[in-house]
Length: 89
Image (cartoon, rainbow, N blue to C red; front, top):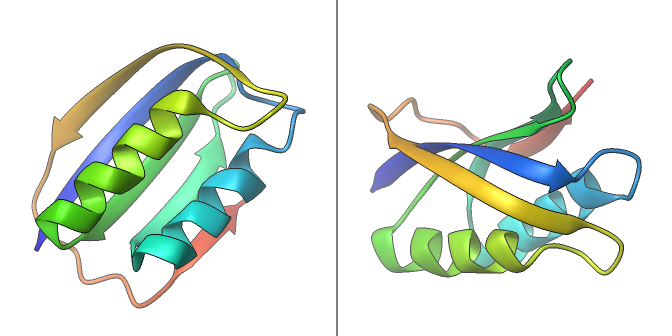
């Protein structure tokens, strides 16, 4: 089990990106949350099995149909024990 905090840069707000991330998390068994940041970036806090997490990260790098990802920064952080994946408002 691993946990990462991901900051996503680009056109990721107002284009359904958080809902895309939530759906990908469900498909890959990832727990945690996604939220918009005040500066226009998106933060993803995700934990899961190593291989599932890697696949999830790669999918997030590609983005949704309407998003445009410029860059992502990944920080490995201690496990929290999330029970589900949610969109924080």
